[in-house]
Amino acid sequence: MNAIVDVSNVVLETKRLILRPWAEKDLEDFYEYAKVDGVGQMAGWNPHKSIHESRHILNLFLEEKKTFSIQLKETSKVIGSVGLEMLSVDLGHPYTNQKGREVGYVLSREYLGLGIMPEAVKGVVQYYFNQEHYDFLQCSHSLSNSQSQRVIEKCGFAFV
Image (cartoon, rainbow, N blue to C red; front, side):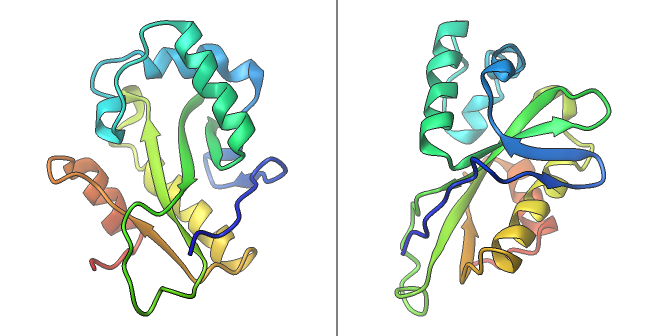
């Protein structure tokens, strides 16, 4: 069952990152990475064609309250996101009566391969198990997305 999510007042810190709710001030950073070919497609969406498209998606992030921005501590730049999405796959028993969500994420191409996404996902996983007491979190990737598969493996998810 989909757990209730509201990240609008949640701020998480890791060694290099601040995971926080999106804000209007993040629009330029968001568009900067969302317009790059090859970034969104790995998460299932096309590159943004305009800053207006990014503004529309940012407004959805603000309304839905289920997606963290990933901000570098060192520069305060927003370089990606981690969301707690509605479950896309029903894993069935034993999860039928338990609360959880599906973790989804995207990262600016410029920051791939630096261990940033596993750091961000681990921060979110720890918070939702330890503070929000979720029963499970699940994660999936397309067969062609080996980078996402590595994040999933580094974060300790078990293949089902």
